Image 1 (cartoon, rainbow, N blue to C red):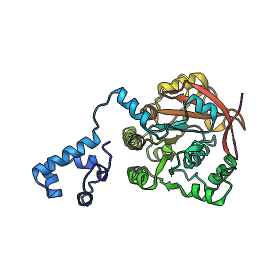
Image 2 (image 1 turned 90 degrees about the vertical axis):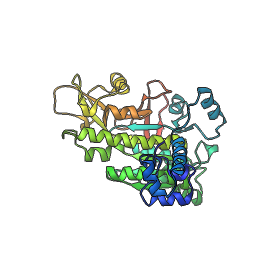
Image 3 (image 1 turned 45 degrees about the vertical axis):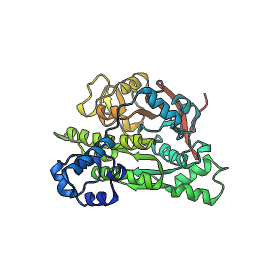
Image 4 (image 1 turned 90 degrees about the horizontal axis):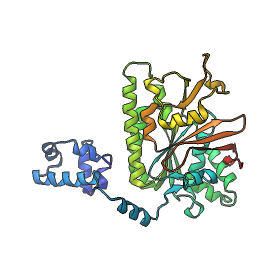
Length: 360
């Protein structure tokens, strides 16, 4: 909540403009200054500054609520609680699909469908609410240059041929997906920090970051001393910003992550500790020799496939789906972590319309 922009807490436009000239744009910037510093910046009296401090503090530190109040508010809220994936068995297991107001991570090896899933969800978010969509815009942050507009159009036309039967509807959907390419950690943080105003002005109902791991693994070598601490600090800032956006605007945030491997029986390094959810998924399905060449290690023991970025990051996401290969055509999605769903898996293939579950 400390990242909330001052323009949204009841301060006048004139005062916000004045503060922004001193790079004071959100609650955290404001509350880090002393009353004397604020008097100098705003030109207000000591009493006026204290009144502002109370206003800003209340805006970023909401009052305690009872469980009943939360339940009542959610019952009265007409906005959807989930964004359907249109994969019926997966939606049923997740109690509706990708949850609004939380972080959902998609993890897996290259080529297993992480970006396909994200593009498919981009199309779904732009659909009218009577079709299970959110009738809004999408911010798609691409750190791997993997997004293609052609694939977005192909999925839209193939998955919903009766709806996307006119050029106008295809144009509307494609114009509501806003692509940002960020190739550095600093650029990504700055982009996320500026998303609040974008969400309001563009009517954004879904934020996607594809992928979180790409920029982090390029800039932070876990073998170098001090890098783990700096990496975790960056990831904590990133998670804080994304959680704030998800909760403040009640929208789903989808992130993709990469994978790493460990030898069976070997202790993981500080860089790649496994979470309880990872342990479960490994013991159930992932702790085995991988047939994919990209997973193999020149060792005599079997390897375990786990999500990258370590244990601290694993606790930041609310839901984790792991995608993996079964054979050359079939793949599997595992619900490895969820506050609602049990550990379970579904087989899928990738076709023109995106991910398609196989009926058992």
